[in-house]
Image (tube, rainbow, N blue to C red):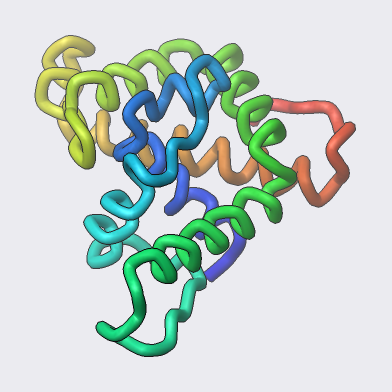
Length: 164
């Protein structure tokens, strides 16, 4: 799986499961409280999300703490490859500023959906669009942030941000 797809998969899980997901994505809320949400997030999303690159040996015999550490290390690797959390936050902020309406719809879909779910129907009603548009917008926002983050990381941390 490409680096962009892995980062996008992580960001999708992050905004869906972190208690302040989309707010933390732009650096306006505390980032991680691992014990509170990471294990639940990874376990619940593992069936439906692309593989993050973690291979844990030992099956059901492996201690829960070891699995949590392994998952945490995988997350750290994905974030590091994207130039670090500060780079991701800068790219998310740049997206929010450049595409305000798309960001607002994205944030609304995240806002009331609860942990692990999106607020697609209410968001579609509010913006007078179809639910497919809301879902595609959510996907595009995260995909664009992931692409921007990886591209900027490849160019170096001091590279200027650019929009589409």
